[in-house]
Image (cartoon, rainbow, N blue to C red):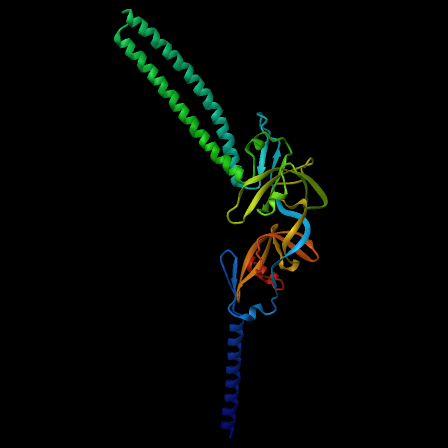
Length: 350
C-alpha cells in the first residue's frame, strides 16, 4: 500500500512538472522578440501578440489653414580668428563641410599664387621672344652663329612649355575648387558668402517639400525658435532657396541667416523655422503618432499585417490636436498612434 501511494505521488509530481514545462514553453513562444533591421527602420513581429493594443490612423488630406513651419539646424557660425591674416573662422556642425571649406580656402590661395607664377613666366617668355628676335637680326647680319639662334629658339620653347605647365596647374586648382564649392552649395551654402562672412554671422539650414517651397522667396523674413531658448524668437532672413530637389526626400534646402549678436546660438542646435501662414489641402495625423529623436520627427507606418516601417516626416504646427505633415506621408498610409512609443524604443534601441 505504501508503495502504491508513493507511485501515485510521484506520478502527480511528474504531471505537474510536465504541465508547467509546457506552459513555460508556450509563454516563451508567445513573447518572441520582434525582428528589427540593422538600422532600425523595419520592425516585424512574429505573431499578433506583440501588437495587441496597437491603434492606427488612415492618412487623408484635409483643407486646412496652418503655419508653414520647417525643422531647422544651426549649421555654421563665424567666429574671430587669432590669425594675423584676419580671416574669420567658420565653424560647421559637419566635419565634411569643414573639410570642404578649408580645402576651398586653400585652393583659392593656390589659384592666386598660381596666377602670380603665370604672370612671371609670361614676362620671362616675352623676354625670351625679344632675345630670339635680336639673335635673328644678328644672324641675318652674320653677327651670330646658327648655334646661337638654335639656343635662343630652345629657350623660347622651354619658356612656352613652363607657361603651359603653370596654366595646366591653374586649371587643376580651379577644377578642385569647383568640386569643393559644389559640395558646399549642395549643403545649402554660398561659397562667396562664407569667405566674406562677418563675425557672429550664423546660418540655419532647413528643408521644405517641393510642393511648398514656392510659397517662400529669397529675402523673406522669418523667425526661428529653439528648445534651448523657449522664451526667445530669433529673427532670420532667407538668403537662398536651393536649386536642387533631393531625389529621395523631394525636399529643397533653404539657407537662413540668423541675427545672433550675443553668439548664444551654436552650430548643431535644432530649432523650428516659421515662415507664416499656408493654406490648402494638407495631410494631418494625430499628435501621438509623432515621435521626435534628435530634433527629427518620425511616424511608424504599417506596411504588412505585422510589419512596420519608420518614416521621417516634416510636421508643422499642431491644429486641433493633429499635426500637419508637409512631407513623408501619402494618403491611405496607415500610421501607428497607440503603440508608437513601443516602436520607437525598438527602432532606436531605447
